[in-house]
Length: 252
Image (cartoon, rainbow, N blue to C red):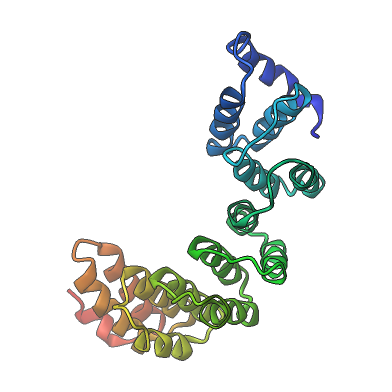
């Protein structure tokens, strides 16, 4: 499934596993590689596992799908999914959510949304983590329409009430594309009390778009929520400075 350029590295790992060739060992090694961002090593370990007729379970598959997404290894990803289709494991919500999350984690918004749409068409339910992943990916890529579609489908199609993290993603998305008033309006309508992540997303974007009025509002909320975070004061000061307001000189 991958090139043999990393075979020497894997041989080192093999030396510690001469007498242990079971699923647990391969899973642990693949997971360790993935967590240390050594994605090619993780994929190579998985390939060797398959070559030795050690069949995967639901503990290793989500990890490998995230690895494939990180490497943009679409062909290998298809092979993993094909392996699932002929095995005793179904492409359930955990597995497919992992694929969505993997693409989203590595800035591949298009792929994340495509897998999100496939999941909707399969009538499977995404969990809160899956929605957060897609919304975060939309935010990072500035995909406003796609973000709204995903956010609205939570309650309309899945009966899931958006949590603070979902609202934070939307506030970040709207703020990122310069829709600060719309982002602030969304904050005001939130059922739960907005946390520092929500106000922080707005404050950061106010600096970028030089909106000192909303920036001041967000900063005041953060001063209460994060008493010891001096970064909020610095951000607000920078907003004042960028808009050339004399008020900046009076800050303490």
